[in-house]
Length: 250
Length: 250
Image 1 (spheres, each protein chain N blue to C red):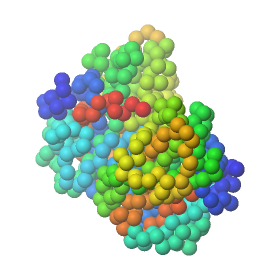
Image 2 (spheres, chains in turn green, cyan):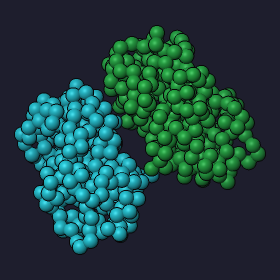
Image 3 (tube, one colour):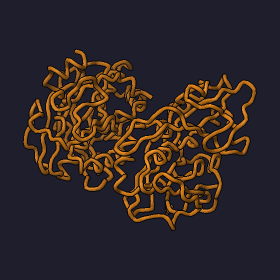
Image 4 (cartoon, rainbow over the protein chains, first blue to last red):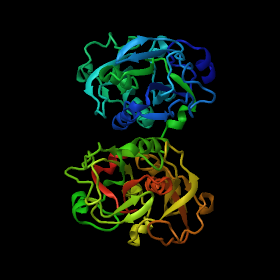
């Protein structure tokens, strides 16, 4: 599928789709919360690398031609005071003229580089969404925003962990190097088989869990900090851009 | 000199000082201009990579222990409506409680990596400030802020240009790879011997001019966009941090 085909027609998780194109997390907030979000992202660049910020009232982005951020993601989450109130496939009816949209780098963007380096992707092999977990690490707060770091996890064969680290370290705009390798308890994760978002995946013998900072983190900050209103993507249901993922390789 | 010694006692340009520690540009604006500056930086990451942002009224930074941003830079520039009104070595008398300070990556930070790669630094050899030029390239505007891209220039032996490109590409937080190599006219620069900021340097035979995006760019945006008030560093007179410059190497 081309990026445009995913934007126009797809409704499920986007891992493995439009191979070679960068994907992005979305968080849109009323303009009077935009500075808090942008500062939160600046202070937490591993989970929140900002790829683009719209002006209030503008629903287009420099990252994709003719895209409409109100309806070109596969699924949205709509939040009021930190509570999930709807999960539509089209957010047009909820969108407001005062919303500023932030597009945040997504780890799906480094997956083609991992594949090229012969690192297997278990969730793609198994046709599942990547598993994501809320950790016990707190982000550095900014203004009225605070919340925990969220991570995505990929099982990686032990002898390829260093390769995975090197490949992803060169892509800081899409979360960069892992934040942790090995014991999930070190991040306060109780059970890898019960992710907070996405699907559980099956390890192969000799696989090690590797954790990357995740762009669901601003969404966790919305839950924790309770701005009056926000629209985000549904975890794993990303905005697929027209930007080649090589553009984010250093 | 240690970073702390530079912060406490030094009054001139900082190129080549406190070798191995990151240096930073400063731009401080009233809180009601902070979103414009932060968005301008996000939209122009090559010239404006943000290393830290203070809260209004806070004159400390996570980048240096016990530092006071009002007086620990060698020289400041004070701006009213885009006009330079003072150039003190201590900005305490001008500082206001509503100022938000932005610390922006500086290319001096990659100079020790260039030295390690045996790329000579003509301005350091010649005991001069690096030459900086206003280009004819416009930044992507943000809110009320607009202005041209400013670049620093280093003469590099032709056979080391690729080395210089590779070394600096790995440090995106301090401007990364060059924006241009060779003909200054391609950037609208009329005469390399008449820099807009800093000092002219002397090329050696076989040297090629190499241009990097420069953290004086937000200062040029202050001149062009005329916020009511701002305090910046004086070009080349940087804030020396306690952060090893290797921390910004990918």
